[in-house]
Image (cartoon, rainbow, N blue to C red; front, side, top):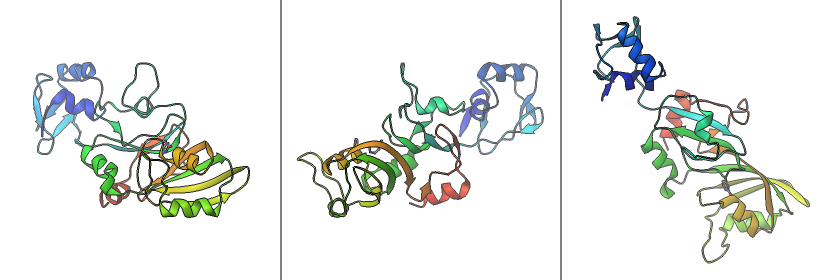
Length: 236
Ligand code: URA
């Protein structure tokens, strides 16, 4: 893929377009050993050797991050009033987006990438990527509820859920459980819990496919996916 050299370098976090313009003016940027003259000069992301002051900058077409989404932040690419998950990611790429949505008050695992194909595969209903949530509810969760969920809930005319797995951790006036589901309908977990007569008070996604939320990531923290994690995700 051919890209303007200023975009190439900005995408790779080498500075703002203005900063890169300055590097070019100073004669620091080269493609295949030849000094770049203007920011609009092109470089091939696979074939060309791009250097700043002699240091090679390789181009990665896609970026993949795993974020522990904090509560209070919306799963959108931009918003004039609300803080978004992308505001938490320090990257100069302007094409990143969250893979699916978590509610504003939900925490946990959210993938951020610019790989539209992978996102599509993970989100497509046919992909059936399992998602596991830890939840706290007001209300008593019972083995009866686990059975209802295992059989596939029919909440009302409009909302049904494919069979899922409810693993109760604690049952009482307030309960805790893990819930694994295969879909991503709007407010899916909250609506499933409502159908069990419970109100979700805390919700956190801890797993998506074979990717678990790393224990060391605090709410608001993120890191790049490792190659192994990426390969496993892509094998879905
Ligand atoms: N289900 C919900 O109800 N909310 C989320 O954020 C995710 C799943």
